[in-house]
Length: 357
Ligand SMILES: Nc1nc2c(ncn2[C@@H]2O[C@H](COP(=O)(O)OP(=O)(O)O)[C@@H](O)[C@H]2O)c(=O)[nH]1
Ligand SMILES: [Mg+2]
Image (cartoon, rainbow, N blue to C red):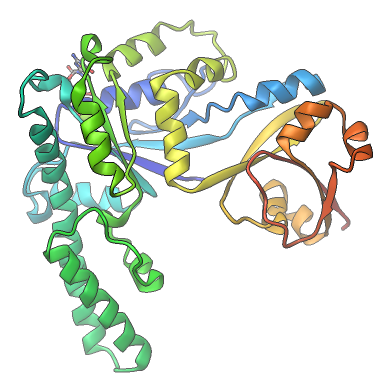
C-alpha cells in the first residue's frame, strides 16, 4: 500500500549500507528477493513466517508476502534547516515518508568511553533539531497564513492548536509531543511528529556486549520510541553472499531471525500496520492494512469488485486455522465466523470474501 520508511542520519553513519542490506538494492528487480524502484528507493519483504505455516497446511503452490518501501535519504548536516548541505531538498524528502528510521553510527565512536551515551544522544539531537527547526518555520508560516485568512471559528481553533504546538517545539519538548489535535497537525505533515525508530549501527565485535544499548533503549522507552541495534556492514555482506537464485520467498525465514527482519517488523509496528491472509491452492497471500480497517475496506484491497458487491466476510483466526488445519472441521467447532462490512480485521485473520456483482 505504498508505505515508506525514510532512513536518515548524519553522513557516514551507515545509512546506505543498511539500505542495501535491507533491500538488496544492487540486485535486479526480477530475479532477486528485493526490488529496486529508483537508486535510493527499494522494497523489502515483510518477514512473516506464518505464510509458510499456512502453505504447509493448504499445500498452495506459491506464497506472496507484503512489502514495505525504504528510502535512503542523503546525510543530514547541522544547519540543513537553513539550507546547509542538501538542506531543504533533504528535508522535503523526509516529508514524503510515513515513518523515519534514524541511524546512529555507533561503530564510529569509542564504545568503551564513559561518554558514549552522551555522544549518541548528542548525535540524535543534532539530527532531530534540524527536523524541529524545519517544523518551527513551517508552523510559523501556517499560523501567519491562517491569521491573514478570514477569521472563522475553524481557523481560530487551528491557530490555537498550532500556537500550542509551536510553543512545545520552541521549548524543545522534542520527543513526546502527543495528544495534539490531529486534523490541522496531520495536514501540516510535521517532520518531528513522524513515527520513528532509532537504529544503533554497531561494530560487529561489539554487537552483543554493549552496556549503552540498554541505556539508550531505556531513555527512549519514555517516549515510546523503539531502539534497535544492527551491524549494517556485516548484514550487508551476509545478504550479498546469498546465492543470486535465492527467491523472494526463501529470504523470509532468513530475515525473520535477523536484525534486518527486526527493523522491517518494527517499521510495520510504528506505522500501526496489521495484516490479513487469503489462503487457497494457488497462493497464500499476506495483505497489509492499517489498524482499525473494516472488512469492507479490506475487501477493496483485493479488488474493487469485492468491495462493490460485498456480502459477508468468512473469517477464521490464524491460531484456529493452524489448530484445526481444515476449514470444514474448524467450522464444526464454530471457529469460522461470518462477519459484516463493519467488522474490524484482526492481525492474522484468514478471510474469504463473499461478494456478488
Ligand atoms: N565497521 C563498520 N563500518 C561500517 C558499518 N556500516 C557502514 N560502515 C562503513 O562506513 C562507511 C559509510 O557508510 P555508508 O553506508 O555509505 O554511510 P552513509 O553516508 O550514512 O550512507 C562505509 O565505508 C561503510 O562500509 C558498520 O556497521 N561497521
Ligand atoms: Mg549514503
